[in-house]
Length: 618
Image: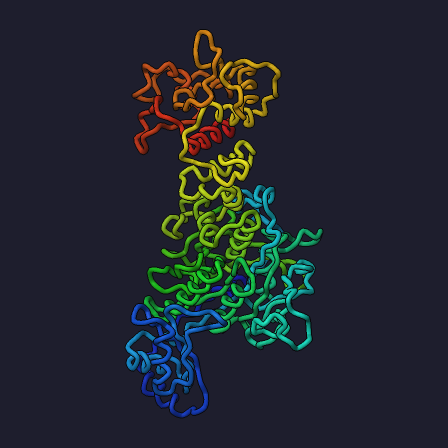
């Protein structure tokens, strides 16, 4: 994206957000300017809210002075609470103020400046590394998905298809015949085979400044033996040009989001944005229109927080702060929040605050460089955003999940970092590994054990709880002894045995694992001293769990004193102390955790946590 490191903070990435200038004191001149330019028109946006349906309001608004057209549709999408007004004149602020008074609703002038930037780069992909090295942990996610079949729309400065890492990366609209001058698929765009240029209104979204190419490379640069690799190397990019240079056209951005949804994109990446004063109607307008598109087309929209080091408590970060958008801040190599991208320019750091949900690496990130045709390094939330969009593509590639579910998988599986507390809503950095593996099950969302479930799934220790589909994990379901057998056998990779030890497990799908567990001396039965039965459908208690794990992992003796206040009389006293010594359990009554609750049943979520700790402690 750019050249030397010294330029990093001069030309920053996407979000060199420009604050709106106050219009007070200029209104009289603006009104005169409006009157002096007959024939010219601009777009402003009326926010109907709950006053009436947008379509009904449009009919009323069309009668207002100077309004050429009022429409409650944009790019074929019916808008729920916003009406676009084409109005004679040039001064958006004055027009919006006048129409707001006349129509009795807020009217957004659409003056918020959206922009992108230009960033320095570096020749290594630390951003894909494990969390301990500051990355988003992509390698383990690739075991399940590489984004095949997923389309990510990049609304940016275009794309340079001649770059080595842009080879075969562009999504092709096979319903359109190239260069025949006909809208073959009847979507309103002629010859849109490979995206659309919303600036020039033509089907060639050719890169102009390099930013869109760099962003696209982080999402889907292929594994082609040269250069770098994207987070989702088998996904495709739908390039949508909305920025002529460093500035981006607001109307183009909104039309691009709608186009993306209407034409098959799964994810929309917006490495661009701007700032406005708190409560500015532009913010509500943009969010409402994006929300309509998200609901209509089931797309996830991911946007950069910006590089102006500002908080959502002081300004509107547009569009990242919107409720329909997943906002992304930046982290550095050590995993911490990026307060400053370069000490030489301390005013440039990641923006943040309530409404910015997650963070991802954005400091010294390797990207494709369209200027040189090679690769460089760059800074900015423009690059944090496509890393997160790539993870969304991996999730979609692994499963058929809704946009809201994808959003939640990303948010609920972050790698937490203390520096992100109060900076982003989740206090964490995007984690591809846990997000992708947790998404195997539709019921892992909302479980406090979601990362443990993801880990167990990746290790193939669990297959699910509703065979043969196995789309559920059932985290709140109590674990039965036969299930416990299979969990432990898979965890330890125990060999099969021909010996049949018990009389009551005939017909159980877990019979083989039960016998393997007995062969290994991890269980002896449930009816001592005979121990001719295993009781396969009995629920496992926390005390029994301690015994199973103590034998399975050959745990050393715990401390002489009691680890908890409630297990002195338990037959599993020593096993419980062993678990406590190894930090496999910390108790059952947080935050005090002075009890173990040996007689309580173990559910499948807790089982995942017990096993993950036991295995990773070895």
